Image 1: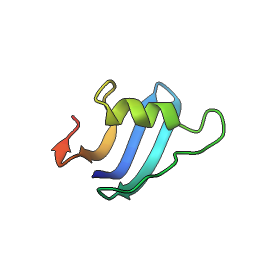
Image 2: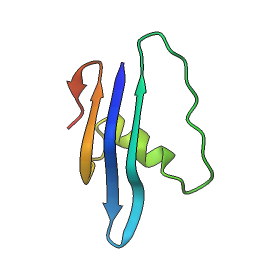
Image 3: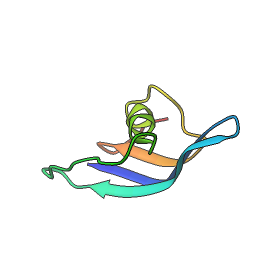
Length: 66
């Protein structure tokens, strides 16, 4: 299960991810689509605990990613 609520990531003056919220239930298969520069990679880096978010919350398997 993945729960993301108002996830935001800012690099200097650039907002890479702006208040993203979504949920993925156990057993669901989803696609993460968007144009270049939409924040897909940054969001995945936050969900994998590789990069910290500026604000918001994210849980993967019930564990807070921060």
